[in-house]
Each structure stands twice: as structure tokens, then as C-alpha cells.
Image (cartoon, rainbow, N blue to C red):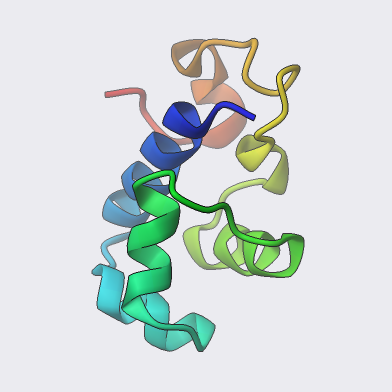
Length: 87
């Protein structure tokens, strides 16, 4: 699992969707410390919360594929699949 890629994606998607960490925590029913932990790469969301994040941010769950294979495609090449511009 590539935590650097994961944490970058999670924070970028949240910002792109216009949410604060506190707002996401409230929507998902978890603490803002949990969101911070995901976005700093200390922990990763479980599948249920990953699906909720996918729905909330309007991105395919596949974009949040944290596996080695999922991270082998550079983000800039995934823009068309995610509708999220690479920064």
C-alpha cells in the first residue's frame, strides 16, 4: 500500500469537493482525528468508509485503490477516469 499516494489523494479529493476535515468527519460519523489520520497516512479507511468517501467526493472507488497495481498508473494519467484534475 502506498500511503503517500493515498494520503495525497484523500486530502486532494476532500479539498476538490469543498469539505473541511471536520465536515467529512461529521458526515461519516467519525472523529476529525480519524480523517487527519487517513490524510497523514497513519491509518487507512476500512472498505465501508472508503465507499462512503467515494460517494461523498463523487469519485470512483477504483480511484482509491491503494494497492500496488492501483498506484502504478500516475495520477496525471488517471484524470479522465476520475474527473479530478491532477495538481
